Length: 124
Image (cartoon, rainbow, N blue to C red; front, side, top):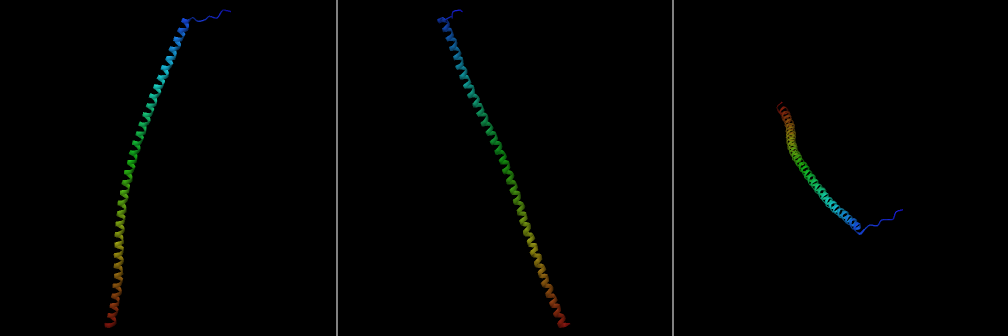
């Protein structure tokens, strides 16, 4: 077997220097990853906030449109109900008038028959 070889001080220094450079690169990579992760999270949060704003704007527009429709329908129904009420009042007026006239007509007929009966009874 061969004897184990021991590293010289210069070789150990070179290896330590290389290890330090690798550790430095690792530290730089870790810092870059943290920075990139922070940028990515900020972009995601910005996108989420923009999406929420857009959805709220769309919802508000839809709600406003629905409110306008509701108000329009309510005013239409109000006008229809007013016309119905006016029509009902006119119908009631004519019904009362016609019923009254018919009643007075019957009273007039009865009175006329009574007068005719008396006339024929007295002069007949």
